[in-house]
Length: 292
Length: 312
Image (cartoon, each protein chain N blue to C red):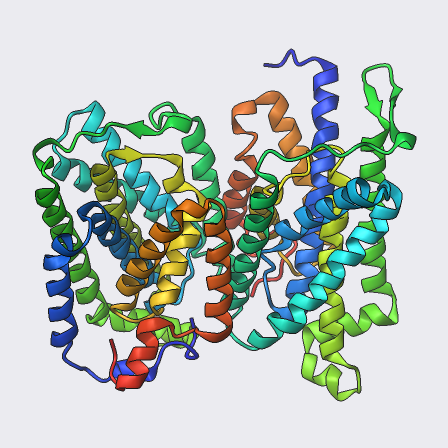
């Protein structure tokens, strides 16, 4: 068990970092949405899947490649998010947050069911952009370019989002509205519009993760179904009070999962849930959370 | 859930003789009116939904992981009946105890957070259990445990009335609990937990006990289901099952005594008609979720209770 080949170790660490990047992007979106809307967006995983499918459609039906899709797909899914927020989520504002969870769960089922009917459950491959083919040969492993790109861009997007929320006027409005929406509204800021935009940005982040994932994992209708449950556990571990907290937790848990795959593969699919249970027993508010 | 759903009218003690008489009549006549296997499935899920409703309706805790107890008990009962050759009654009792023990573990962890986190935690723990069942030896992996013996309950009608009796026992326990002083404390916790704490109730203990009860009764339903269908499989522990039981309760009416039964029968009937449509079932389920949450939060029985101006 200790004689693990170095290549395997670094290979799994890299996959762990990539999964961590997806956890971070998804839990970041969940945290922003929950902060302002008080809704746990269960369809986040389905919208991640939708993002990957939009990229696939663009390539297969319109010949639009990876790079434009990286912008176009989050935009399209963000617009879809606007529709969801305006037509459905708006109707249940002020109710118990559990209704938001059930409503978005219903949306997730519909999306996943529709795409399963359309494409079956096996999924389709998505071609890697030619600029990122190949890899760097390091003394201990081969580092595929695309994977490095995914980690880098995810870090940039996560930190950028964090910087916007913490450092700009728009971000300060968002933080203020998260604390006390009626008061912010009294200052003349259009809170309903801000809610719509926040939801759209949150789901656009999920779609971006979907496009990034498409060349690594296959594009399939259920690609987000199990992922969202892991992301829920990540969110419980990190606590949703802190934006930076959800980013850091996402990456750390991804790495931990990768390491488990090397040292004790049987537990790799459950390790994050075990960590969640331990954190709940030791520190119920989560690593970065405030005790409610 | 909060006062938006649960009508205050339930505070008035009202005799439930008429609805109970209707329930008994339907239960007795069902196998002569519909296909008995279908009736057994509906009865099992009705019990499961009632057990689930004990938590969401009376303590205000949304468990998104009740498949863990239903499916866990299903495996326990199937394994005891097949590998140890236990009679069905004993296997079901054993599976109920297993589900109660699982409920104690999950409940103790999950009640450390409230509200929306509780739902996410139960979902995550159930998913962990799903992966455990996928890998464990005794569950038979993807194949599940097949060919579970019904022993002396081979006759379909004998089997049906056995299942109906199990349901009645479970339902009687739930009915008794929600109309007991213990049940009143649970409702107090649902309405205002800090207030209940300030009145001196150890609410965590009440919540864990309610959780264990709900888990054990869900297990009773799951263990019985394994004997009826002679099968325990991964479907029983999948998150889809947790979602379906929420949907049944939501359709019927959260926090009503008879709603989960109506919801379960409605859903199983619907599923029966839609089974040829494959994954369209998922789309329909999703659509019902959306419609119920946006426009029909009281559910069938909840609306009926409002029209009749009496709790049901």
